[in-house]
Image (tube, rainbow, N blue to C red):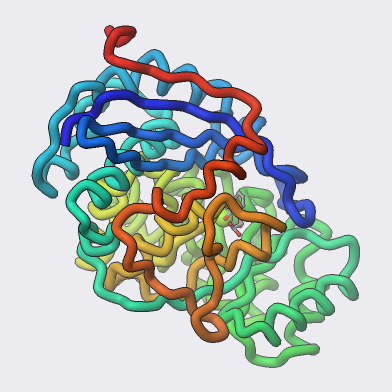
Length: 377
Ligand code: OSB
Ligand code: MG
């Protein structure tokens, strides 16, 4: 296929309920979609996981728009891709540009998605995944009080979610975790701190061990590996790294230093599918279990996460919950929903385009711009 043009859209999509973490609160989904148009008349979609403000990572939807329009899209306009090998190296075109991985990933994912449609090969097959359904858990934001949390978790368990992840922060951690253990016993339970603690909190973090959690996600700084290694020595609970892992090299270093026992993979955070596949290789060799993280994606990014999760190294339930947990009306139809409680089906449609409802995309759109060859550098 030959890439003819790339279109950027920014949407503001209402969310069912606010999502609160230790770093902030999302009340609506501010999202950039990337569309890659081929000469063969096919369109591939990519969803960027950056948000309005640089709270989870340095990137914002403002920087993403600029980076894609002025740097990354021009690198791939006119590109010809015919094999899976071509896909795996398409990101090399912007290797010289540092960082901005969420922007790079959104373009790369749209290209993979277009290739899937063009060659009529399901995306998960292009990646090398073989599962026909995937196990999922749910990430529960910080609640007003423990009573509300317990009630919510009860509902999620009844729906069949296969593990419960609760967001924690100083002052909202031991008490809610204890309440969940008392209410629900030995359910698969974990906590995500989004970098809310430091090594100075070591004595406090040791107290998490009493809950027998599956893992503690990213307790320390977003750019740290070394202190996590120190903390892991002191804890029985496995540490899972999220924010700290941007590449297969980061994964290798974290594993070598024994900074974690588990890694959360988010395609946006690591710069694309090809890098996610490299992390998968590194972790397979080191026996480090993986799971697919989420960034409150619309159905487009959600389908891509489902495809990634079909890889054999993704042995733990991920954060890819059904669309209905986030949105009244998703951008795709049919929406992502359970095949049976706690499981999502793996799509057999090659790319996501046939499921995207363009009327809904246009309904929530606040900005649009086409980058065609004419303007490329
Ligand atoms: O740390 O995994 C995280 C949402 C936004 C930013 C960071 C994170 C999250 C979640 C929600 O935990 C995952 C989801 O339901 O998509
Ligand atoms: Mg996390």
